[in-house]
Image (cartoon, rainbow, N blue to C red; front, side):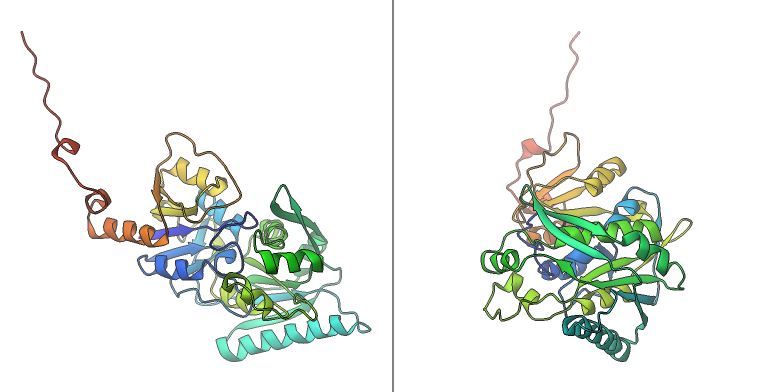
Length: 344
C-alpha cells in the first residue's frame, strides 16, 4: 500500500503546522505502508528529521505534478546535494557565522550520513520576505531566477537552499508565545515551488540566522524545535539525501497510490488531482486549519477523528476487513435488500 500524506504550509494546521510536529503521525502512517510520500514540511525540524526509511521526501509542487500524472518518481540510493548560501559579507559577524555554520553542518552530514555534497556561494542574494495575508502565511521571493541560472552550471541531483528569511522579531516572538500560523512557512514553500519548477529537481529550503537574540523561554513542544538552532540545514540534508528524482518515463506512477491523507478544511491541487484519479482521501478532523474550503460532491472522502483512526482504517483495508464492521453496530437491514417481485 502506497499513501500520500500532506500538511499544507502556512494555513495553521493543528498538527504539522509548526516545524516537524507531524513527524509522529508520519511515522505511524509509514508503519502500515510500503511507501509513504511526504513533502518537507511534514518532517523538517531544524536539526532533526526523524522520517522513516520508507518515506519519500518530495517538494510540494513536484508532489502535485506527480499526483496529476505528469511525472514519475525514481527512487535512488543517494543524491549529490548542492547547498547554496547567500553572498558573505566579511564585515558582518552574523553573515560570517552563518557561512561557518553552513559549512560545519554540511561537513557533519558528510561525516555522519555519508552525504555527497558541496557548498556554493550565490553571486546574487536570494531574498525571502515573510508576510501574512488574511491569516495565511505567504511572502515575496527575490533573486530566484538568478539562483537558477547560476546553479545550472553545476552537476547535482538535489538542491538545498540555506538562506535567511526576513521576518520581524515581534512577529516571531508573538508566534513563539501564542502559537498559531507559522509566519515563515508560506514564503519557503513559494521559493521551493518556483525553483523546483525551473530546475525539475528535488529542492528544499532551510532558514539560517533564525534564532532570536536574547530570547530564552520554554516553548510549546510543537514550537520548541524552532528555537534550539540558528540554522535549519540538517533536516533538509537528511531529506534530500535519498529524495526521489523526477523522471518522465519510468519509476513510481500515481496509479500506484492508494490513499491521500489530509488535514481537515483544506482543498487544493493534490485533492483535486486525487479526485480526478479516483484516489480516496482520508480527512483527519482533529487536524483543523484556518481554511474553510468546501468539499465537492462526489469525491471519495473518508472522515476520521485523528491519525490513530487513519492508521486503523488503513490496517483494516490491508487485513481485508470492512472498516464499517469494526466502527459501528451492524444490522441485517444494512446488507439485505428485499427482492422486487413482479405481479401479473
